[in-house]
Image (cartoon, rainbow, N blue to C red; front, side, top):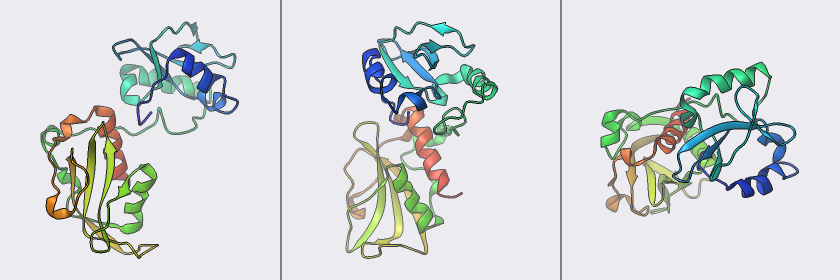
Length: 222
């Protein structure tokens, strides 16, 4: 869902619905069918017998070009109906999908190459490193210190989280606190601080990617 991975109908059947383990959690998710132009055309869930059902529980046919796990932003006006459906049927999801927090860039942030809302803020190092669970990575060390974290997004772009002091390479269990100097979007490979800067406006990200990045960064301050 976060990576917006899609399957053809045949791949979905083979890799998910016929899989001895994945088919069970798959029944507790909402799926989306996309047309050949990648536009959402139908949302559905999988019944016990493997058929597709709509939000009202009616069996439907799905003849979509691609199929994916639906993100709340893609469900739009249908989201409340699916939330009600899962609540009424006491369906517990394998991970936060329908109840997932969604975030949006402000118009100013869409035009900017850095996110001021996260700049110059102090956070526990342990909280910062929770980002690695979301796919963030520490940048190559400079003088024995990781001075930034980065996350690959939307092709060759990457979000760079610059640290004031940085995390010592030799520190296997970093403690203390870190000051986030800046959060920028760049199309360049991660590089040392003296060559690094945001060169891409955050508006280049699609809404789902932007929402997930903001959600991950917000979690650092919880």
